[in-house]
Each structure stands twice: as C-alpha cells, then as structure tokens.
Image (cartoon, rainbow, N blue to C red; front, top):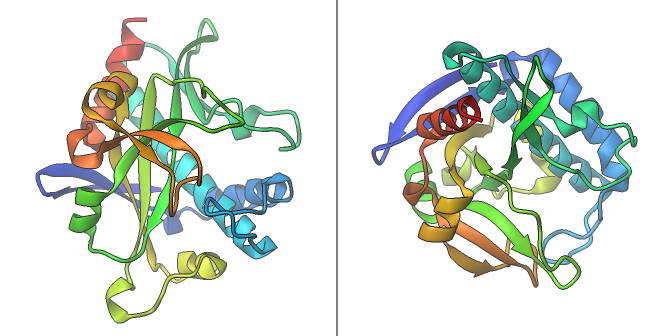
Length: 245
C-alpha cells in the first residue's frame, strides 16, 4: 500500500492507495467472508441488511483496519527505538470469527511480548459532501454505551479512517450494496484523518446519541476531527506513548 499526506483545512490527512496491494485486498476479502456470517444483519438504524450489504460493510472495515495497522507499523519501524509490533485481532484470533472482537489492533513490545496499548479503529463512509466539509462535520468515534452494553472498555487510542465517495457530485447515490464495486472502480478514496486519545475525547469531545451511521439507542463519546490529532500527530503520539512504557 502507498500512503500520501495531504493538508486540508490545515489538518494533515493520509490517503491510502489500497488498490495497489492485491495481496492485502485478498486477505481482507477472506477475513470479511469469514466474519460476515456471524455479523448482526441489522444496520445501525435497525434496517435488516442483505448478505451482500453485510459482507461489503465487513470488507470496507477490514481494509480500513489493515491500512491503519500497516501505517502504524511503518511509523513505529521508522521512528521507534524499540521492537514495537502491531497486531490485529483478526490476524491472531482462534474462534473462526464467531465471537465479538476483543480489540482492533494493539502494540506489543516484541522482545518481551508485552502489550503496550490497544487502538480502536472505527471507519465509515462519507458520501454526500466534499472532503473539506467531511473534515468539518465528521467525528472521531470513541467509546459507546447501549442498554445491553452499559460500559464499553475505554482504549488508549481511537484511530479514524473514512472512505470518501468521489462520485458524490455526479448525483449517483451511494448504496452499500454496491460498495465492493465502488472499491474496484476506484470510487471510494480511503483517508486516515487522524485520531484521538481517550483524554482528548473526554476533554474536547461530547456525548452524541446514535443515529444514521451510528447505532440507534447508543450514546457515543465523540470529538470533531479538526479538534482531534491529525494523522501524523496521532502516529507520533502512539509512538511516544509506547516508547516510555
């Protein structure tokens, strides 16, 4: 995969050229296929999704997870002084994807196999506004609570990848049922827009009730993307955190 830094509204984001990595795409496809049958069929707004829609959502999410994890590993390798290794739960799990994820990604100290931190990666699709407007109105998503899950475990870090549907100005409506085709047609640009620490989410963010892309009936701790860390700053913050642990 190739990563390119862009500055939009004085905020540095990283575009991911995921189509250049066929091996990664196949790996993500295989994992999404395995995970989809065990995924709840209702979407966040309680509409029942088709099998294709469930798979597409998993496929996009898995590509985003891998892209974030690979980028973080590259940064740790380039600037770190310790043997820091990024692990994705989907790559080490042994439950055949039947159970809920225990984490998205984590950093371990390789020579001691000691867990240093965990990173939550939450992706979504922006399909109606420009890239600049997306940065103004989208959030970094933190922990959430529901009636059945009164207290999700807080992570040290929350990383934010967003797909931008680049056909939004043509009047072609986005449909999750066609997401795999959008990917192959290079109509979904993937950006890692940055992220936040739990402290930033707590001090600069707010509680938001779930609607639209978020789970109905849930409350999320969120912070505006432009009030959070941009992509390079987020990577540096994770590195510094791991170096001193």
